[in-house]
Amino acid sequence: MKAIKQILYDFRHQSVISWVTLLGTMLAVFLIMIVVMMQQIQIAPFAPESNRDRTLYGRWMAIKFSEENTSSSTLTYSIAKQIYDSLPNVEVTSYAAHDLDKLIVSTKGKLPKVVDIKKSDDQYWKIFNHSFINGNPFDKAQYEANMKVTVITESLARDLFETADVVDQEIMIDHLPYKIIGVIKDVSSLATEAYGQVFIPLSDDDKKSDGYWDGNIMVYLLAKTPEDIPAIRSEVERRYTVLNTQDRGDGSQFVYNQQPFTPEMRVNEQGSNNPPSHEQARKTRYFIFTLLLIVPAINLSSMTQSRLRRRIGEFGVRRAFGCTRSKIISDLLTENFILTLAGGLIGLILSITFIFLFSDIIFVSSFDERSAASMYVTLEMVFNLPIFLWTLFFCLVLNVLSAGIPAWRASRVNPVVAINMGNK
Image 1 (cartoon, rainbow, N blue to C red):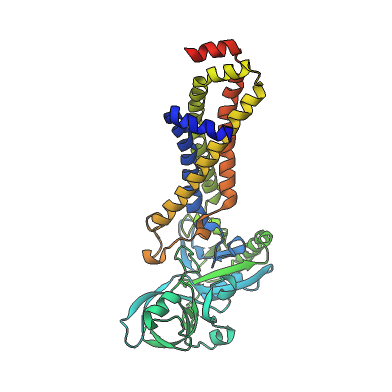
Image 2: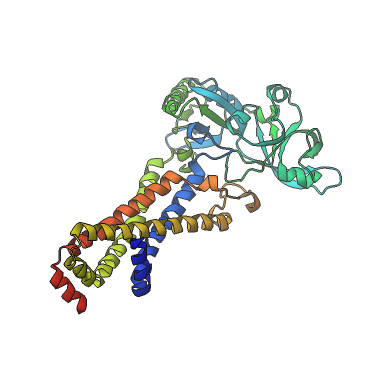
């Protein structure tokens, strides 16, 4: 209580210095949390991509025809099966279309809509935990029989039928009739692999390809545990070696570019012909974090020293009446801790508010034309309690160092000298 009273007193009588101290911590936490949230939303688990920590992605096929000529393509179904099927330590393997389709969906009495279509196999639903409001996903029998069944989002169901209770209803997808078998909660397009408005099974046509070139297949692997990921990737590298023993008649060689990717590697891809540079990206991120912490700390240190110089007379009076040096230091550190905590919490609230208000600007999608309306943010996507606590901890350490040394020096000033200094 005494520390809070002193802080309020300082805000009244040393308002500029006190506010700069508070705002410095707030700004450091705000900037770091913004950077963290932008990274978090791409790699951290959140529904319906709750298994990101053990999900791997097979995305590209790079092919070397000569020393000067390397090209790349999305995977064909046959090559994807040779590389990724029945891998040890993999719990689920799913094959889906690499790209979303934009097709026309319609029903009687409603204007047609252009929606994002996700094509996948039945195993897809075991990797991504969509929340079903009604019905179920398509199963293995429906998938293998090429049945015209579909799962749609709640908002699309309400647009087309004015209710979410639409299981067994029929819609037209690209002028073909499909039976609705499930309705899921809407998915933010920031969930890059789980997003879609309409989900249908991969067709036989999607799986056809001439040879090994120019397919449209994406592979998702769910490892049994995160610790199994290195072994899975090593086995995939071995399979690339086996593929390159086959004579394709054109002298081409498949290039292993560190696939399948982890979420962090996927975010830091350097084009489809090159391996991702996630280690460099990580170093850059840590460097930015350090700058965001150190620069405010330098400013806070000078502000703290200025604030203590103005209180030197107070310290002299307290020492003259028997107050110990340790008590003065502990009081100052307590005040600094409260200011740091307050600044950290304000910075956190502002960063979350900022992300929610400007998510459509911050997270503009560069790889497709997903609508901004589907690009919503939830607290689960952006808030990472351990990261916030670590950020607050480092701010506290830096603030304690910036306050502790001046406080220790101030406490050692002779009481008579301190009182005389305070009267000047």
